[in-house]
Image 1 (cartoon, one colour):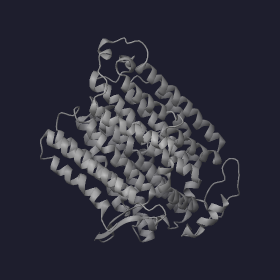
Image 2 (cartoon, rainbow, N blue to C red):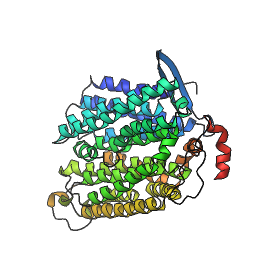
Image 3 (tube, rainbow, N blue to C red):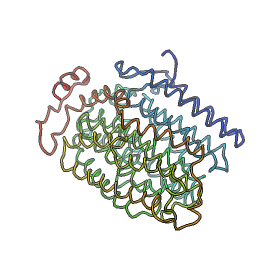
Image 4 (spheres, helix red, strand yellow):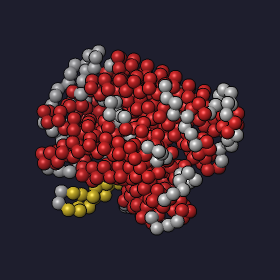
Length: 514
């Protein structure tokens, strides 16, 4: 384009964040909304300008800052879609906070704007240490959002969130230093093509896994997530579930799989095992929850387990399904937390038993809540169906057992989500205060309607979301083909363990084999 659009997308919310610190409530809210809308417009331009058949890395920017560290930005189709998801959700988060946040409004808006800069930086970074800085710095604004504007136990939840996610990343930093010393570069695209020794890959993979597994989060290191969701304000839960959890999945697809393919194949059954356990255990826990936010939080762990299983299926269907699952979950889980926030702002409780029969006095709300509930359980025509179908189709090529267990988790997901909806929207109105709550206002319509449109769009025409990622996923699958495990059915012979550094030349034969 000849225009540093990625740098501008980093600078706009950062400049607005600094300005919000010196503005009053109304001005800070207005500036935050304008800045996030500007970035949304830039994200749409980025998507429209992306050349699907072009180079793998586009919109690249580079500048040497000091020895061994580069300001290097660039995106492929995978990063593009996650950036679009981030800038799409941010204006909605500002609207969700419009009336509910009354104290330290300027600082609150600044924290969200800073987080937007860091999220985009994670997905656009092409330097290893630039990625690490953005990845870890994202903890700070979310830590403040939970700890300052959260619920009664916000201090405990914020410390738990910070310590869990930070400790896992220390091992990743050590691994990064070793990789740079061996490969002689901090460039992520170059490292994705570097052939690390098979023995070293095992330890490097485990070091990165310690960080990304907590970030997803995977069972059993997921316990920080329900506490963080319950204590965070509504918008904090939206951005935590919608984008921050996706950084773990992005880490697997950007680092663990292409950089350590042998180790990824070696630990496939570890990932499958943890994913199967997560789907069943967290779904059963969700069934007995009394707090709406905690139920949705446990459902997030179950859905992200399908993502990890799809990523480590070592085939195109699994990888595409995992990416669509991340996009769909970002929309649907964010919308469900918004639905909880709508009625929490009216009644100031998240106890499921305090509601009931809301379809009578809040029919518009009940309609949106029903759509997002159906998308969460994978109803055909919604984004959830496309994501789950592709992911499970990919996993089935490797393991029918894993597919059976993951599908059982989806059935349990239908049970707890429909049970939640029945108790909230249907039945007899037992509480006069709940029966007197008004339906959606204009601001709440503006929050929920765009997400509903995106969920239906992705469900009806998923190709528009998959097309930008297809070439990059095929390139990754071609590199993984040389280390891909045979699966429990031994459908194919194990390929050679040695693979060339540049797998682009082997892309066509890999596609012919499929």
